[in-house]
Structure formats: C-alpha cells, structure tokens
Image 1 (tube, rainbow, N blue to C red):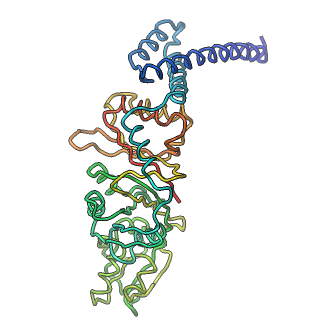
Image 2 (cartoon, rainbow, N blue to C red; image 1 turned 45 degrees about the horizontal axis):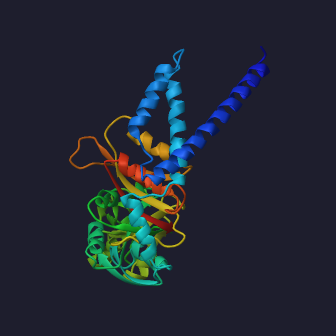
Image 3 (cartoon, rainbow, N blue to C red; image 1 turned 30 degrees about the vertical axis):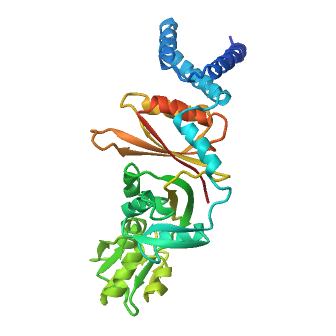
Length: 379
C-alpha cells in the first residue's frame, strides 16, 4: 500500500472513532442529568479505575499503556462536559454564590490600606494607582500586612507577589498559608530603580548600599560593576532611602524609586539601574472577607494534593479539559512534611463560567485541602 492509502485508512478509522465518541458523549449527557436530579457527584474515582483496568487488560499487542492514556483523556473530557451541565453544590461553589450576591458592583475608590515600608515604597505607588484616595498604614514586614487585614484593622492590604526579573516573592507565598485572606484585585507596577545618595556623594565614595532584597536581585548587573560595596537589606526600598537620609554618612546609598529623592532630600546619582527595562512587580490587594467584582477574570487557589504519583497531573488535566489557561503554578514546602509540597495556582477564568463551579467540587473531593483565594481583575 502507498502512504496515501494508509492515510485514507486512518481517516476512515478516525471518522468511526469520532462517531463513537459523539455517541459516548450523548450518554454522558444523560448521566449528567441523572446525577443532577439525584445530587450525585461528577467524580467517581472507583469507576474510573475499573474502566482503565479493563482497557489495559483488553488491549492487545502491548498497547495497554497508550490505550489507558487515550481513555484518561476521554474520561477527562467526559467529566468536563458533565461539569458544564451540572450546577456546583460544594462548599466553595456555595460560598462563591453568596459572595457574588453580597459584593458591591463597583470596586471602592477610597479605603484604609496596609502596605509594607514607608512613604515612597513601591507598594505605596501601587496603592495610589489602585485607589483614588487611600489612608495608608505602613508596616515593617509582610506578616504585619497579613495580620492587619485578618484582624480587621484595615480594609485592604497590598503585597508584592511576583517580579518579571527576580521571580516569586517567596516570603509572601510562605505567609499565605498562615493567614485567612482573599484576593480582590491585582495590578502590574513597572519598577524603575534609582541609585539614591546624599547630595554631593559620588559613585566612588559609596561603601554601603541599603535596599530590599528584591531590589538587589533586580539590579544584579549594576551591582556587579561596583567594588568593595556592602549590601545591607532593609525592610523596603523606601526604608533604605530613609536610613541613608538620616545616617549623616557620606559613603552610603540606597536603591529605590525616584520619588524617594524628593521625599528624603536625596539625589538620583544613577537611574534605571535595574537589569532590564521590562521590570514589573505584580501586587495583590487582599481583604478579610471575600469580594468578587464584575469583570473578575483571574482565579487563585491553594491546593494540597495527596503525595502519590500522578496527583498533580490529574489536577492539571482538568484545566486542560476545560481549555483553561493556567498562568501560575507555584510549589511551596508543606510545613511538618518531609519533601512534600503545596501548590498555588492562578488561571484565567470567571467563577460563573460553565464548568468552573463543578471543577471546584471535583477538586474538593480529590485534594487533601483546597482554599479558594479569589476571583479578581488584574490591570
């Protein structure tokens, strides 16, 4: 046979498979209706295992593994179809429905907001972009921001979570598990670092530089060009500028925002010293109570999965089946467990989209723990 004839045979088989797949999905639709009427869950893990075992045993010519892989995909598509047809009724789906009813239609213009650092910090600059009027509470560390929100001392908190140059802000992710909070909005803030010095100080005079550790990472190329300069970590970039201004020394500098020059009477000795002009920090706005505003299109989850082969793959396959764009997958060590990890997931979706409430139901059944962190807009 020629190659074209082989391909013709494949086309005929594919058409037969498509016809059978459509017949299968019609039955899946009937099953979804039955489950809806009888309040049954989409997921039936024991039946899945029986199906896959039967497929493996019935496959011939050493085709067991590829046959199981094919039917895993078919089963995931079947469950995704059922999710679209059935309402979510789990704890997360129920709470989301309540949140949608209680959230105002417009994000507030004015609020009391907790930020780390002092005046001139990038968090303050981001806060002024997010709120038209903000009463800012400055705190020394990220933990203080989380705590102020959890205890109801302020309306919101603003925290850096990712940077395009230095990556994840590990300290924030490690604190997420310890506090009860909800993400209600996020923004991307361009970060342009400036070398700040007391008036008259020259580059060759500098023996010590103060800034936040993230700023040092983002300005690594510039710092490598300096000799015999000590890097001292401060609570925030603006705190570093404040320390330099109050030190009275003529051999110190700070790395921070240009705004800190006028705020603390310093001079911008060098500008745009970050590794790349494409240097953006993503900030999240957190609240004590869940809020989901119109137009929210990004969802964040915290998930603890069973420590067994395929657990993470099973979760990711559910997003693929629903054609969801998973934009962030961050693993963090699970406290008290040796080499076991928890996961933070961001994906593009709205909680009211078909299949999403049912996805939450299924994750609740499969995960050891799942926390809905928020559905929000990012700008």
